[in-house]
Length: 127
Image (cartoon, rainbow, N blue to C red):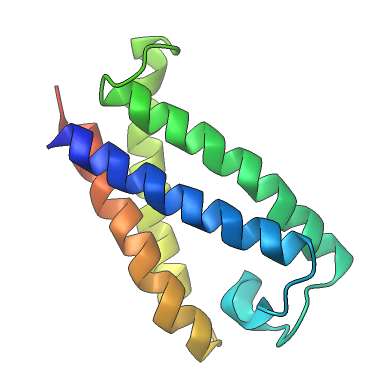
């Protein structure tokens, strides 16, 4: 179960990374991210944030893969609490996306982050 959850989370994070990279490059999808305040392309500071988020998602993926035992690159003393921090982070993300002023962001990102929260919880609960 942990392997399926970690794989699902990584595929989801990969899709989010492509989305964020497109935003960073100027795709007109601002209504789906960063509070949905920008209907079209994001301003420069948020484009930079989108680019940085791709790197952050990669770290998230490594933590989840390591905690699930699919890779062994981080110390267990780090991955166990880090996976719980990710679970909490994604749970907060569900709430934050759920209360977004942007209908588009609520409709698309809330379920995406819910998938990440559930997958992260499953990985965190594993042995």
